[in-house]
Image (tube, rainbow, N blue to C red; front, top):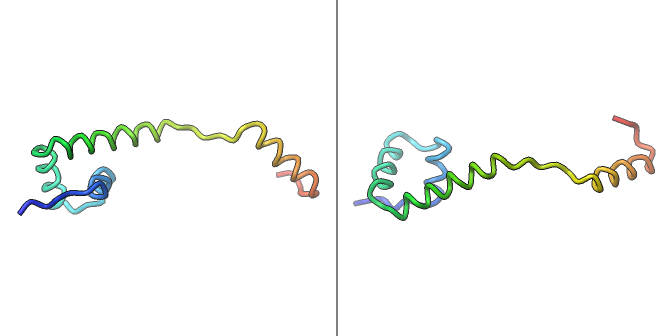
Length: 77
């Protein structure tokens, strides 16, 4: 019987959190199932995009925090 793999299984595979035996079964399923392979490639692409995001607070937020800190008498850090 062929095990149906889920998106969670793909994530575990990508992050190498799955036993070797299960990895082998998933690799075989990826070669057989074009839809599963496409889902895997989409996940890799999404992860790559997320890794490139650089989050920084806006200047407005920084100023609001500094203003609030100054108004409450908190010490500079």
